Image 1 (cartoon, one colour):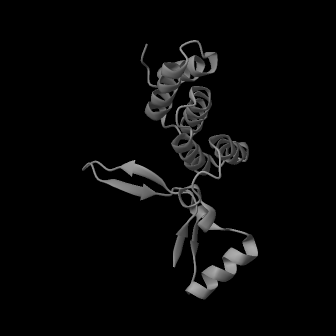
Image 2: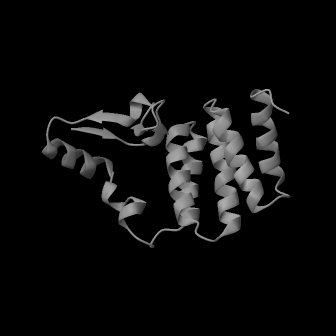
Image 3: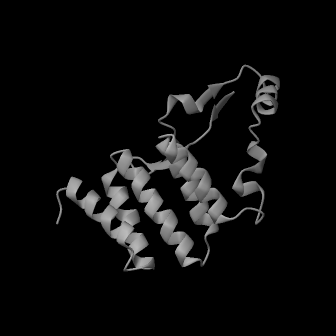
Length: 148
């Protein structure tokens, strides 16, 4: 069994969407299902409580904070994972969505994914055109992309 703790979707050159996990520390190999279940119990990893499985009992803010925690330890791939989940739960909360999009922009920038960083910052600006943080992140990404 292989487990990828923080996969993220990526579009290949042929247009197919695949799951990627670029952080080797997030790939774990288990020899049997029993090993997997023991590891879950010992490490407190409970994948059954991931947001997709627990309905509305978790907020976008809680998920964003998980992303912030991963960002704080420079695990940008996992932070993107949590920010994407948070965005799914933001619904019509423009302020929450703006914060999440700004954070996504910052995480993408740290991974040299400047196109995505600019895209998320631009989306945050659609939520709040006066958001200084989003404008700054957009400008930083555009600078690296050598675009005005």
